Image: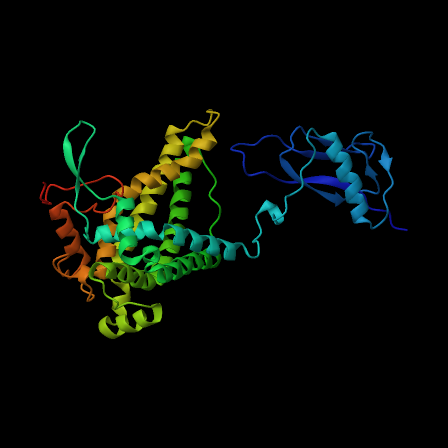
Amino acid sequence: MAPAPACGLQPIEKLTDHLRPVMRLTVNQSMSNHDFVVTGSKDHYVKPFSHVRTCPDPLTRKRAPVAPAGPPAVVAVGMAAAAAALPGGLRAPPAGLGVGGRPEPVEGSECLFVVLGAGFTALSHPLLYVKLLIQVGHEPLPPTIGRNVLGRKVLYLPGFFTYARHIVEVDGKMGLFRGLAPRILSSTLSTVTRGTVKKVFPVEDMEHVSNKDDVKTSLRKVMKETSHEMLMQCMSRVISHPLHVISMRCMVQFVGREVKYSGVFSSIGRIFKEEGILGFFVGLVPHILGDVVFLWCCNILAHFINTYAVDDNFSQASVIRSYTKFVMGIAVSMLTYPFLLVGDLMAVNNCGLHAGLPPYSPVFTSWVQCWRHLSAQGQLFRGSSLLFRRVSAAARFPID
């Protein structure tokens, strides 16, 4: 009769939320065929395995009989005993983690993410609607006299809330959501495309390397991750840009009170008829350039700050590193804003709408010409602020 298998414990891997190793989990067998576990850590995954006839009790070191071919019972005895022997108990891999502790895809999570993204897009639409009207230079309300921090009188243009109240007076509350449908579709396409590209072209998780002797290795990982992000962003931008153009044109119809672009499918037919296939991709180049510059600057700056400025001996080093990229994103987004402005203006330029024709805007032959025009007027950051909007020196308004 074959001997009955017994259970032991074997380490799988350390949890990934530590910057350096904590302890080593050792599973061994004494000369008297007793299994024992030596550890002082509860931050490892373990798994049972069969290798001897009996499964010992780590607490009493007494042999405990185990039923042959009974893995559930063996696992229960071995894991319970080992859990009682360790401070805090042993931790099994949490639900949703597969082999090696890697997360397994959760069904429906991508759909939930798309739904949440659509909800956020709807909530933020009035903000971007007002921003676009300011970008094209539509100022229906006169400036008001205010004072700056030094007490001097300055002219301020209406902020977001005053501008939004004006839109409600003209079009009602639903007027704040003009162009929402194509924008939600554009956002959904972008999210789905990013998820698809991530599955088709997976990239290994980038581990943090803080040792300055390994800067080259660490920088290579950052460049690899950034290249992967750039691929996802460029693909999603190209796929979703036609609907972005339609959304922009639907919104700027507020300026001239047009109804030329009234629906997604009718807008697609009109653009294809009047401008051809290239009409769906006007303004794409500055948007992609802005995305690429943003990704590389943000990731490289965050990497060097985390490597050189944040010391591993600092108790809150991991917390600071988690916010570095967020802070860098805010700073870099201000530098790349002109790309966003030029891309949006090109999307509505010379399309038959009042907002894309003189006197609001000259007819541009390329996005470079648009950039130079805005730069000459000092308007490359027009619309970047929605609360405190000072009148530029080039603008002139009568003051009573």
